[in-house]
Amino acid sequence: MSRRLTAAELEEIKGRHSLEKVVGEYTKLRKLGGRLVGACPFCGGNKGAQRFEILDKGASWTCAVCPAGGDIITFLQKAKGLDFRGAIEWLGGELPAADPEDLKRLQDAHDKKRAAREKTEEKFREAERKRLWKVWEKAFLIHNTRAQAYLEGRGMVVPDDCPGLRCADDMPYFHGEEVDERGRRSPIVLHRGPAMVAAFIRPDGRFGGLHITWITESAAPVKIELHDPETGELLKPKKMRGSKSGAHIWLTGPKEPTRLFVAEGIETIGSVYTAMVQAQRAIEDTAFWAAGDLGNMAGRSVKTVPHPKLKRPNGRAVSVPNDQPDPDDPGLSIPDSVEELILLGDGDSEPVLTEYAMTRAARRYAREGRIIRIAFAPAGQDFNDVLRGAA
Image (cartoon, rainbow, N blue to C red):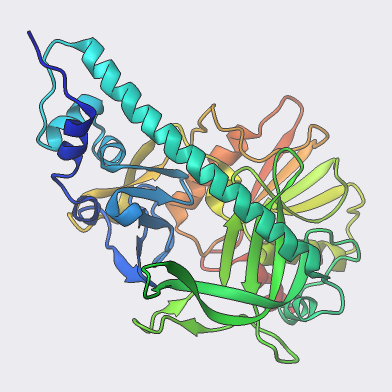
């Protein structure tokens, strides 16, 4: 008679291996402000992309781009293509050879714990969303602000009707944590200053969070330069907070457009809008959206495939999301009124990852009678580079 594996035994098996060391076989991790971050071993990303992070004191991981996450079992299933039993056995545990009910019980318990973690994360996201909404309410309309000057300094025209962009005068930049004498943790404010803030609109039409770009206080503002005080590493001047999955930033245009342009970044979509205005193109029926990043723009893939060139530290190929959309992920909420959808791809992103993502997006948003076009900036450039070069 086979003995069932208890939940406590399952936790003990998971604890036999360090998640940090297992992940380290696939990507290089580094400490950043008390966190462990690195390029995601599944979706790759640009060099130095801090998209993958180990959380909960080494108990779980997450990627903001795939999006994906979980514990060491979930990582092994995704990284090595194992099922639940295979992941347990890789960790050194044993499962009854012929007890499918026991295996199902363990899988259900694993899924239940994951659901509980996701529920906790959802509560945190909702609290964060409310905090960010207060920031958005207090921010100034973008016109006649440093945020407008920042965009104009990059050659862009700010639309008269620009509902998705505002300017915050005193935005804190959090980086790292500090612990007081009672062991309580609190985030460190590394910088405070002006920032362009953009609202993410969720598929349900509600405010979801903010895309934040910190800029200098000079008369001709540019993105700030901040360095990690411990490592000296140059930090990104942009952050996304709140819930962005499936959400978009509405630069300008009607709510139910006939034609829709979608890009990763604000500067990219703003540059294409500017080029069309300068060319005196008819855009009355056209809307311009930013998705925040490539993963949000394209949505989840149905599976990952080996990258033809990129290698992990162990010499194996990096796995990247393929060009087939996951049917369970609707992606962005493209209005039914859209007859022509133009997807804008940056030419300075990793080419294989970007091509797969753009194709995946085109397939996800395809509808009968809808025309979908993909436009790439020249290699090594984005559309703002093209706009400024033309100027």
